[in-house]
Image (tube, rainbow, N blue to C red; front, top):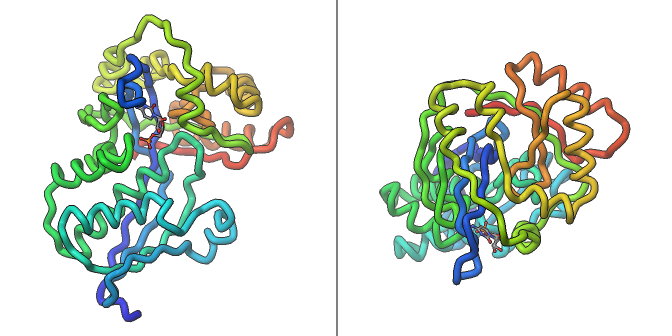
Length: 297
Ligand code: C5P
């Protein structure tokens, strides 16, 4: 099929600096207050116009080697579901070839799949010259998942409420650095939510939001919190061990992102991240599927 034009976009990931569960809703989802931070870890996506009306998806050659077995290329992939939702919303039957160079691990709590869906909405809106507004893209995103709206909003940090889809950007007056690592096993988000115990006094994101606005990395670190950590640890021994070993190596607390299984340690600068990443990668006590220096972007 002859491409008629092509758009390339990077598709970012996030970490949660704060995540509180406020209750279970009648629709089965949980009411959340979470603070998301966009990170430098990105997939790369290209969108090429084709004459056919269908949308196809493929992995780049190098990521096919690493992700080929675990990355679905059928309609179960959020990328193709986002493309179809956009076609239906805008009532268009245009086609595209989507190619993705994958770097963000799956089942990691980094919202790689949600970022891909948001990037697809933006990329195809441009490619097909649909002219949909940001509120319209938000409307489609909310039908597809809970984390997609954060990436549609295009901000560095935000407080997200509802089931995660209501996004209020917060000014981030600092560059945050962290070292993130994922154990060999990932976490299933629904399973982690199911493991939550009911009774807890809810915490508020107020302190960490205040620290983000002031750019106080020391205070941000002090207020990082994730309510899903306990149920995720109960489900994933490797992740539980990783939290302990990261914190021992870094001599500071380690945290989990989203529903895991990525864990992270905040650092003060890129040099400290580089050193810590080398120490984590060299530690022989655990096999990791991923270790990386990330920063807010
Ligand atoms: O919306 P998303 O597809 O990311 O959610 C995956 C699963 O995580 C949901 O099916 C649900 O089991 C759980 N979830 C939840 N409450 C939320 C977000 C996700 O229970 N706010």
